[in-house]
Image (tube, rainbow, N blue to C red; front, side, top):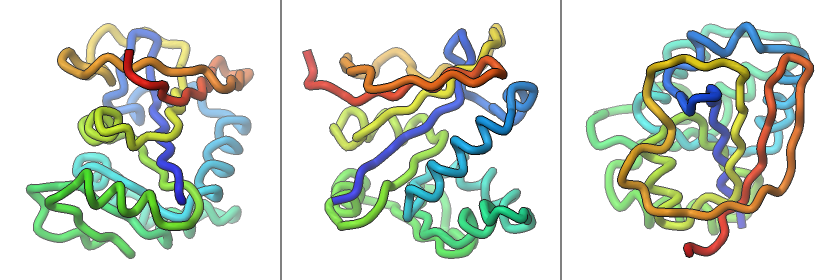
Length: 183
Protein backbone atom coordinates (compact mmCIF):
# COMPACT_ATOMS: atom_id res chain seq x y z
CA UNK A 1 0.00 0.00 0.00
CA UNK A 2 1.26 3.46 -0.89
CA UNK A 3 0.99 6.53 1.30
CA UNK A 4 -0.29 9.90 0.19
CA UNK A 5 2.10 12.57 1.45
CA UNK A 6 1.09 16.20 0.99
CA UNK A 7 3.75 18.90 1.28
CA UNK A 8 2.72 22.53 1.40
CA UNK A 9 4.80 25.71 1.44
CA UNK A 10 3.17 28.04 3.97
CA UNK A 11 3.81 31.54 5.27
CA UNK A 12 3.39 32.36 8.97
CA UNK A 13 -0.03 33.84 8.21
CA UNK A 14 -1.18 30.68 6.43
CA UNK A 15 -0.74 31.72 2.77
CA UNK A 16 0.19 28.94 0.36
CA UNK A 17 -0.59 30.71 -2.89
CA UNK A 18 2.26 31.27 -5.37
CA UNK A 19 5.21 30.20 -3.18
CA UNK A 20 7.53 30.87 -6.10
CA UNK A 21 6.94 34.56 -5.44
CA UNK A 22 7.97 34.50 -1.77
CA UNK A 23 9.79 31.32 -0.73
CA UNK A 24 13.09 31.64 -2.62
CA UNK A 25 14.86 33.90 -0.07
CA UNK A 26 14.61 30.96 2.35
CA UNK A 27 15.84 28.28 -0.05
CA UNK A 28 18.98 26.54 1.18
CA UNK A 29 20.99 23.37 0.77
CA UNK A 30 18.95 21.89 3.63
CA UNK A 31 15.67 22.67 1.88
CA UNK A 32 17.03 21.29 -1.39
CA UNK A 33 18.08 18.05 0.36
CA UNK A 34 14.64 17.73 1.97
CA UNK A 35 12.86 18.14 -1.37
CA UNK A 36 15.32 15.76 -3.08
CA UNK A 37 14.82 13.04 -0.46
CA UNK A 38 11.06 13.54 -0.55
CA UNK A 39 10.89 13.24 -4.33
CA UNK A 40 13.05 10.12 -4.43
CA UNK A 41 10.89 8.49 -1.71
CA UNK A 42 7.93 8.85 -4.10
CA UNK A 43 7.03 6.99 -7.23
CA UNK A 44 4.23 9.25 -8.46
CA UNK A 45 2.90 12.79 -8.22
CA UNK A 46 -0.67 13.83 -7.52
CA UNK A 47 -1.57 17.31 -8.73
CA UNK A 48 -4.55 19.59 -9.08
CA UNK A 49 -5.00 21.54 -12.30
CA UNK A 50 -3.34 24.82 -11.26
CA UNK A 51 -0.28 23.13 -9.78
CA UNK A 52 -0.05 20.80 -12.77
CA UNK A 53 -0.15 23.71 -15.22
CA UNK A 54 2.61 25.54 -13.33
CA UNK A 55 4.79 22.45 -13.08
CA UNK A 56 4.16 21.41 -16.69
CA UNK A 57 5.20 24.86 -17.89
CA UNK A 58 8.46 24.81 -15.91
CA UNK A 59 9.86 21.31 -15.37
CA UNK A 60 10.21 19.92 -18.92
CA UNK A 61 12.96 22.45 -19.71
CA UNK A 62 14.85 22.17 -16.40
CA UNK A 63 18.05 20.21 -15.94
CA UNK A 64 20.37 19.54 -13.01
CA UNK A 65 23.28 17.28 -12.24
CA UNK A 66 21.64 15.58 -9.26
CA UNK A 67 18.78 14.11 -11.30
CA UNK A 68 15.92 15.97 -9.60
CA UNK A 69 14.48 17.34 -12.85
CA UNK A 70 14.81 13.95 -14.56
CA UNK A 71 12.86 12.41 -11.68
CA UNK A 72 10.16 15.11 -11.81
CA UNK A 73 9.77 14.69 -15.54
CA UNK A 74 9.88 10.89 -15.46
CA UNK A 75 7.50 10.09 -12.62
CA UNK A 76 3.88 9.17 -13.32
CA UNK A 77 1.65 12.18 -12.68
CA UNK A 78 -2.02 11.94 -11.78
CA UNK A 79 -3.79 15.20 -12.55
CA UNK A 80 -7.18 15.87 -11.00
CA UNK A 81 -9.21 18.24 -13.17
CA UNK A 82 -12.67 18.48 -14.62
CA UNK A 83 -11.63 21.30 -16.98
CA UNK A 84 -8.46 20.01 -18.68
CA UNK A 85 -8.97 18.06 -21.88
CA UNK A 86 -5.49 16.58 -21.94
CA UNK A 87 -2.35 16.46 -19.84
CA UNK A 88 0.67 16.57 -22.13
CA UNK A 89 3.54 16.62 -19.64
CA UNK A 90 5.43 13.31 -19.80
CA UNK A 91 3.70 10.40 -18.02
CA UNK A 92 0.62 12.45 -17.05
CA UNK A 93 -2.83 10.96 -16.68
CA UNK A 94 -6.05 12.87 -16.07
CA UNK A 95 -8.49 11.94 -13.35
CA UNK A 96 -11.73 13.66 -14.34
CA UNK A 97 -14.36 11.76 -12.37
CA UNK A 98 -14.72 9.44 -9.39
CA UNK A 99 -11.75 11.31 -7.90
CA UNK A 100 -11.99 9.88 -4.39
CA UNK A 101 -12.45 6.30 -5.60
CA UNK A 102 -9.62 6.58 -8.14
CA UNK A 103 -7.17 8.06 -5.63
CA UNK A 104 -8.15 5.48 -3.01
CA UNK A 105 -7.40 2.79 -5.62
CA UNK A 106 -3.98 4.33 -6.36
CA UNK A 107 -3.25 4.44 -2.63
CA UNK A 108 -4.04 0.71 -2.27
CA UNK A 109 -1.44 -0.22 -4.87
CA UNK A 110 2.01 -1.24 -3.61
CA UNK A 111 4.74 1.29 -4.02
CA UNK A 112 6.48 4.31 -2.62
CA UNK A 113 4.79 7.53 -1.52
CA UNK A 114 2.35 9.38 -3.76
CA UNK A 115 3.46 12.99 -3.43
CA UNK A 116 0.88 15.79 -3.47
CA UNK A 117 2.24 19.31 -3.94
CA UNK A 118 0.20 22.52 -3.72
CA UNK A 119 -3.29 21.71 -5.00
CA UNK A 120 -5.24 23.13 -2.04
CA UNK A 121 -8.70 22.14 -3.24
CA UNK A 122 -7.54 18.59 -3.91
CA UNK A 123 -5.85 18.44 -0.50
CA UNK A 124 -9.14 19.45 1.16
CA UNK A 125 -10.99 16.68 -0.70
CA UNK A 126 -8.40 14.09 0.28
CA UNK A 127 -8.40 15.18 3.93
CA UNK A 128 -12.19 15.07 4.10
CA UNK A 129 -12.07 11.52 2.74
CA UNK A 130 -9.24 10.42 5.04
CA UNK A 131 -6.83 9.73 2.19
CA UNK A 132 -3.84 11.77 3.40
CA UNK A 133 -1.34 9.74 5.39
CA UNK A 134 1.07 12.57 6.16
CA UNK A 135 0.84 16.35 5.89
CA UNK A 136 4.15 18.21 5.74
CA UNK A 137 4.02 21.94 6.28
CA UNK A 138 7.11 23.85 5.16
CA UNK A 139 6.55 26.89 7.37
CA UNK A 140 8.44 29.93 6.08
CA UNK A 141 9.39 32.85 8.35
CA UNK A 142 7.42 35.49 6.46
CA UNK A 143 4.07 37.23 6.87
CA UNK A 144 2.54 38.05 3.49
CA UNK A 145 -0.58 39.90 4.60
CA UNK A 146 -2.72 38.62 1.76
CA UNK A 147 -3.16 35.63 -0.50
CA UNK A 148 -5.05 32.37 -0.57
CA UNK A 149 -4.88 30.50 2.73
CA UNK A 150 -4.30 26.77 2.74
CA UNK A 151 -7.35 26.03 4.87
CA UNK A 152 -10.47 27.96 3.96
CA UNK A 153 -13.72 28.22 5.86
CA UNK A 154 -15.95 25.22 5.37
CA UNK A 155 -13.37 22.44 5.69
CA UNK A 156 -14.28 19.79 8.24
CA UNK A 157 -12.55 19.85 11.59
CA UNK A 158 -9.56 17.51 11.50
CA UNK A 159 -7.14 16.83 14.35
CA UNK A 160 -3.52 16.02 13.56
CA UNK A 161 -0.73 14.39 15.54
CA UNK A 162 2.69 16.03 15.25
CA UNK A 163 5.00 13.20 14.20
CA UNK A 164 8.22 15.13 13.63
CA UNK A 165 9.92 18.45 13.02
CA UNK A 166 12.93 19.70 11.13
CA UNK A 167 14.45 23.17 11.37
CA UNK A 168 16.64 24.72 8.70
CA UNK A 169 19.16 27.52 9.22
CA UNK A 170 17.17 29.66 6.73
CA UNK A 171 14.25 29.71 9.19
CA UNK A 172 12.06 27.13 7.46
CA UNK A 173 10.48 24.66 9.87
CA UNK A 174 9.07 21.40 8.52
CA UNK A 175 6.13 20.16 10.55
CA UNK A 176 5.22 16.50 9.94
CA UNK A 177 1.61 15.66 10.82
CA UNK A 178 -0.50 12.55 10.66
CA UNK A 179 -4.30 12.93 10.68
CA UNK A 180 -6.14 11.53 13.67
CA UNK A 181 -9.74 10.43 13.79
CA UNK A 182 -12.24 13.27 13.63
CA UNK A 183 -13.39 14.67 16.92
